[in-house]
Length: 444
Image (cartoon, rainbow, N blue to C red; front, side, top):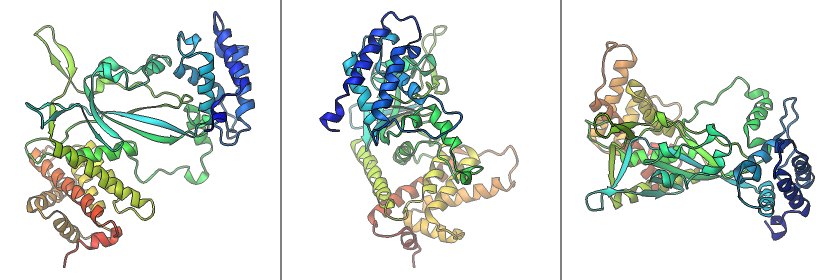
């Protein structure tokens, strides 16, 4: 923006100042006041004619809401205003923020993902001290107290939307979080709130009605990528342990777009808790029972995995992806599943990773796997996963049959090892198409 663009028009400054004066001692709903209606008209007069402004004409529909009213209401909740009982920025500063909000083209969205039960230790420190954070790409894994968490979110802005939106910082402190921020197109204001979803459905093309995507991720794409790297980095080969270093019961996000609706507050009760204290005086604290110690070399390896993944994704922008999106999808689906469902997802991952369209040859898959991983134990683990699927999927086992931790761990490790090795191989042979890369694993 130029200096002229960042300076709000005088009519906007006057309208905001008038609204501030009207709000002092006002008994009516400020949104119904003459001053607020004047501000709406002023915004329409200024920004509707500007090409590229966020005040764009909405699709015509009989259910069209007053999106400008909703957007302005949100704006004053996020920024604070006298009628919200806030001694915040004055009308001059608010007019400037409002002007910039109408003209901005990009906004940021921050995802907060609880890594339930995880506790990171610094293996390089004496006595394995707490590891405060690990950064890789735009992501950060960090352990936050309630006092630190309150500074990571727009806490007071959320409170002004009401109790259902107030982030429960006290209950969610002392936990490990994955935090990542992405840039989004700001878009028209009617697309940035709950009404935008309705309008999107009303204007959906006939070709899309009655159809669903082939697969839908459980996580936002940027979070999915970060979780993939964490799982590959935290894997344990101990066959007596369950390889699930953390749980993800929900994801939460907020945006710096002052016109957007907030997300509802997450539910702390679905996270893991444990009791502590003297008998009869117990109280709940966060369950931090999954201890993972990371040395400097482990952190560097984690960051290298992230770089490899994104080097492949950068290539996918100009040609067919060398890493199948379904391989990533099924790998993470296995993380959210248990028992035979997890085994089936793991096999889906390895087949999406190492087979081409039209190939159904398991012998070819196992040959590629062996040439990729070159580990007899992992080869046997993958072969065992196929035996488990054949045994349980086709009803050959009794209904009360149980899977052992040993069997599941071998299946998980075998697939995770292949995914990790594939990232390395694909980044080394970046000039090859996926078809040529997989055929190079056929051997002689």
